[in-house]
Image (cartoon, rainbow, N blue to C red; front, side):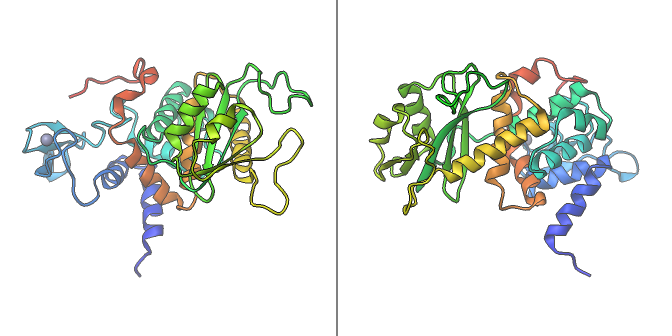
Length: 323
Ligand SMILES: [Zn+2]
């Protein structure tokens, strides 16, 4: 009986979390599809190196005829510098991509029988890998923009200041295109200039934007051809009656983010918050895909992002010399 492609990828995924050979071939397929190319020079004149009895070489190496170098599926990826089995990485990708809330390092270390430190290392790099590219396409159409505060304990919250502006926690700016993608950015400050800069990086000028009445949004809104509408959050208003002027999409996304952070990770420090935001952003933006497609997209997204995450590179577990 012929299986449909969806259950095929899930089958392969399941096998890849228990067997190293399956893990290697799974990642190879996600990275290169039917056309394996050299990650160093891009040449497609490449071959798998063989060991005894014609089996694959024990490190699953490839050789490129173009640049004469050896490489593996780890080369130029977030998993390059560790000896951790790839099945651990596949499992980490799967769990980080599939459940609504992600997986904590504690869970990953228990389920894969690795140290907590290694689990943290894996998850941080996966989150780094799925982060939106700097020059990703901008949001279009109607974009709801707002900020929220996650991580640490709520402070300075009162009925006069229900949204926590002016607290010591890190503000996160959220921008969501209705029916489309979300972008989160941790902000140092919510000054007009910083807000303008970050919004312009992520939102196309043809947009119509919807914010609350925070004065710093006013001058920024004027730049948008689609106009700028407000809801009055201080007055408890989230929808302007009889219109489509509301902030329901961004409120929904923020509540998912908060439930995820508090439910799975309990709290997140300012230092690591941008890393977690990547993961939530990725899960939300791939919400229409199934688990298999999402894992595949995550592995592709992590391609080529090897050295950009300094914090982990400083101290990887089981460091091996790179070839
Ligand atoms: Zn090459």
